[in-house]
Length: 272
Image 1 (cartoon, rainbow, N blue to C red):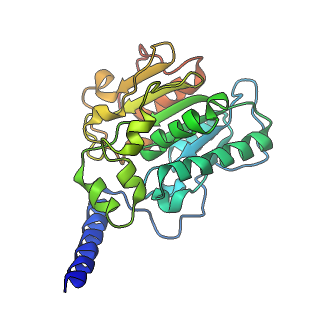
Image 2: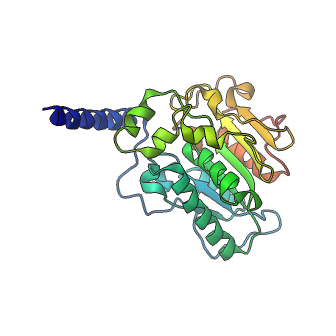
């Protein structure tokens, strides 16, 4: 009887997690898992002197690369960047250290194909946080020039969805729960190791990374910039899932990639 109740509870948790993900727009469209977004994965692309680092896009939990980067990938390609994307971690549900190892291998492949010395990484949600594990523990500090996190889960979330999903199908959701063993290790001093420039972009309307300030990073202003969209555009209502498709976010990403150092904290974007 007890075993049946346990199985029933697990099934209910799974249903609740999926239902909540659907409500938040976090599930991936069927059939898109192996399709790169427009503008990405031209393995013959060679960076030019104006855009010397290829850009690696890292999608968020339960997302496909195609859906996550449908807007930003072609924008970066049109701006002159070599753009690459990949799927990882079983819809990003694997333990985050395992996914970071996949990122390490993908970056090495991109560097080998393009001949570049470093990459820039732009990531959404888990994809903005997970690369920090690669930087800190897997040798990425010498291979990443810019790390731009779009609503990244840098300090996790207090959203109960993370625990509900983690109890069923999502070890990475457990890792992203505020106070997890993983996050304590990741955010131990130094939180932002020397090497990359770090830009963290947040919105006060984030309903997934809660509180939204969890996205922000500690570190010297010379190589760490924290951006709250509403500081420049008070009427902007971008939410977590919308952020990679936001024209406002796109401006901040391009600002971070086009200059030496992280995004310019004095940058004034066009509010849309």
